[in-house]
Amino acid sequence: METLGIQHSTKAFVRAARSIPGMGIIDTLHGYVYGRWPYLCIGLGTGEHRLLKVLAPLANFIFRLLCRFPSDNPQFDKQGLKPGKRALSALSRKEAFADTYHAKVVRLGSAREIVSVNRSIRLKNLEKVIPYRLARDLILEKDNRILLLECPCRASRSKPCLPVDVCMVMGNPFVSFVAEHHPGRSRLIDSAEAVEVLIAEAERGHVHHAFFKEAVLGRFFAICNCCPCCCGAIQALRNGIPMLASSGYVSVVDREKCAACGTCVEKCPFDAIRMEASQIRIDPQQCMGCGVCSGFCSRDALSLERDFNRSDPLEIDQLLAEIS
Image 1 (cartoon, one colour):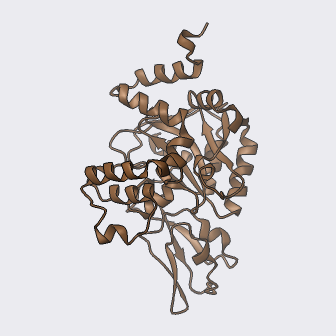
Image 2: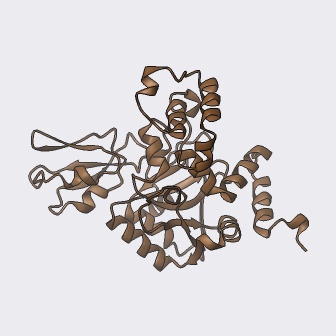
Image 3: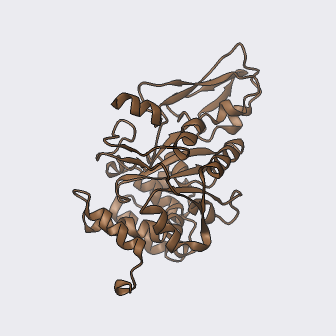
């Protein structure tokens, strides 16, 4: 008989949280709410949830009070943002949000490596990879279960990019937790199907993000395939909130091969490429090293090079080699 009707996966999550030094009740509750009601949380974060629109006057008052950023400020009003996005834009100006990374941009090859792991791996102290204040863990099992979930970001939009089921939850207690609480929005898949989803999303010009979160046991828990029009993390980055860490690479152009067709300008999810005087220009500070541009270049004029000023890549073989 279930204790007070609590599901097995919830109890497993709480037990795992209790085993982590420094993870308190508030963090555990935060992680539970994040996993239990992701569509509500993401919908509120993107400003698309109908509840936020109903409570917009109260939400704006609270955010103005907390941020001391009055609504009559011309720099605030001229943006014309929706209530939730106005709040997000205001919060991005606060130093308290300097450590808000949630995910690591990964190249297609790295994402395939993660979902296809054939041995148990535990990597600790990943501050060089994910720039959090606390150490991050990467735990992968040989028989790691993968759950394909409807993307909360896409699901919150009135006209989302399709398909919607592109988020991959990995490992326990996360897989069991999400499967029990969202059975109608998720299904188990194997690594072969996971690779197929990754490739299909890459062909659509979408970015692979490996998600970590302090409240979600301080561990890697998902790979999301993100489009710039729906993804809350990419939009937060555009508003100045550093929710995404660079892949550790930067795109470079071979001018002898480049035909300046402009395809990469259109496809770049981070608006890091522009056309100037009939030449492609890449902003290395804005480039996140996702590799989308090189995947669409018919002349192989674009490639990724290691940027040692950025965080280390999330590449399993490389990280294991460094440890050994």
